[in-house]
Image 1 (tube, helix red, strand yellow):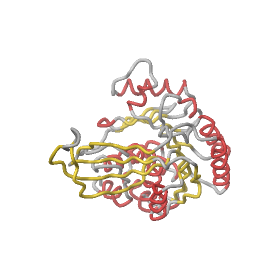
Image 2 (cartoon, helix red, strand yellow):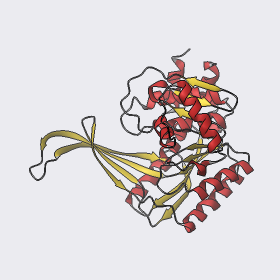
Image 3 (cartoon, helix red, strand yellow):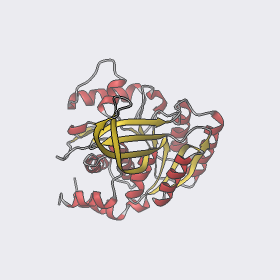
Image 4 (cartoon, rainbow, N blue to C red):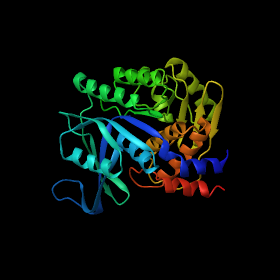
Length: 328
């Protein structure tokens, strides 16, 4: 592993990477506060709100990671005509993310509102509809994707959060269109219908997601992870699998070999958003011409930054360079 090469790539070449993220776009809202008593109205804790924040979530968080790393980033998916959409678009604009691929629907903008007391999540409110998106909205998104591919892209990410954007028809259309243009597709999966991702170049499940599609559960051990990944590749016609494995790092399984990449020692506060970072950094590496094993190594390093933060977080170019610099 040549750390200097990876450092130079992150410092100098990410700005040339053109990446499209397609999937379930979300807004994450947080209310932070202190809990000192129980409500007299019902047996629930009273949270005195001391601060709040809104950040990009789901597929939008994948795009956020790419933008903070310096990539030319586009985002496609579905939003509603509501306040949450206005906030989402403001944040995308501030990060320089092209959101012309967002289709406005009659659904609410998918939003997750979390109440945090101290460091403990106490409540989550979801604003969403998760039925498959209607055909006339899907047609508008397809038109945008075909136009975007004709403008040249280096990689496409499918970020599936099970909120209706990533139907089997949509995923298969996108994968075929990308391959017609010679563009690799990287998928972050959701649910158990992985046939919709058939022929994708890479898929990035965690161990829990792998176990959801297996009859016999596996343990988080090298040999079992590799065996399960090869079964997945055969059954679902997938070219490569990257399994993220929490404290054990990740495994890159390809037809010709397997690479087990250990994690870095770190304090873990919150794993939310780490999968978004992994797929963003790995796709960026592919887009920039790095070898897959180098991309997986870089993605693993980036995830180590994110899990040390509380709440959804997007790693920056400066943070990733700082981690790499410590390895010289």
